Length: 585
Ligand code: FES
Image (cartoon, rainbow, N blue to C red):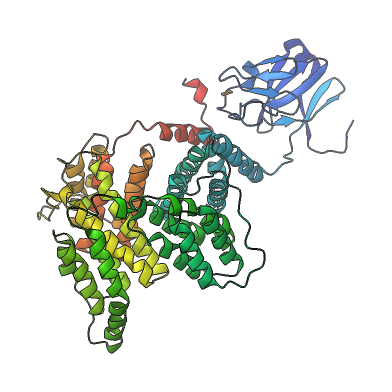
């Protein structure tokens, strides 16, 4: 009777299956349901792949098995589903031997590869539960997060004609925050990022790549100037062809960053900073995924450059003070100031260390003084990153001091300036240039324009000398964020945690967990992730504390949400753990 396949195992007597029509059996570690249907016997996993309902309670009609919980339908023979939210159910080959039903329980597929396929299905059809289940398998054990990250990046840059926007930004933010989390919490962050990509791409037309110039002698600097020229006249296709041609011509990461960051700062504070932030995130995504994704990732940015609003056209940047005129006059002086600063640094006698005074000017009320102070700092030997990080910190302080008497949407005003300033700073760290330095001045002007947010200003918490248990304070923070508008209270608790020598690593992990607890809010994710980036070089300093206070205040202002997305992940997690959800339904 043997077919030469050693994996067949006795499952039941044929007469028992025929008499009952359907019989659930345990074969080794497998819960299996046997169906007698149209003179044949079929064997499928008894656990519905959607949410685990017992398929023995299902109905078979005309060769199709229907689960009785959410009505997913399966081809009884192959197990293939007709409902993509459910996944295929595993079917087992059957042999009838001497009046007995034997089934082959050996695994003939690669579960990892299968879950990669399922993740693609989840992305294509925007099914968060499918994505949650897939990442839990793909990242289980020592699973590498880079592969699912790449899948999301690849998908998002191909299947949204409008290119890179919030979804891919959130995906990259979560990937950046992954190391702060305990390993068991990391799939949740990946799930949120992938779900953001899927939601934003759903129903969108795909992006068809533009080919590079066929043969050209144009060098990288010519392609850079053509790119800027085409962005200037809002010709996204021509600009995209320059990008792809430069990459094919061998432009490296620094050269490409120079091309893109130069163009994104050719106009003032384009689209309230989003294209610059997306550019920074795109390069961070490439750091993780690899340069082989450069063409599809970097070309996906171009639409945002070409069609973004330019602040030269806005009233606030023109009246009552013409900030554009101040900036253009200052930009004329930038090359010489950079040159003088280089000489000062080379002479090693003017080590610039005046962040405190510069911050005071930045937060004050005089845009001409702000431009002059930045220029003077450059001449005095302040490096590009010194200036950029000082402006980023001033933008953080606007959030740390944001008064809750402002209108709620004003949080976004402060956030946009901060994420733009942070993006420019990170861009300068990656590929410094005089062109990109203009972005530091733009960010400084935006900090100036946001001054109303701190009138009146909230006082940043100071040490009170009271000894408190840091762990209890973390628990208090968690409880506070279960209630609406605990902005100042949350800032205070976080500050007291730090003043009582609470471990920063534990706090950062908790902040990401609290962020993941809520439904995704693009701006809150940007704020927390940007704050983490800013905090790294400032860890253990008062300035570092202010960064985290700003982050938690923003998070508290936007908590709690209904937490529906987290509930879907919880279902995926419990299914992954083997919980029998239907028994509690
Ligand atoms: S359809 Fe079977 S558990 Fe949902």
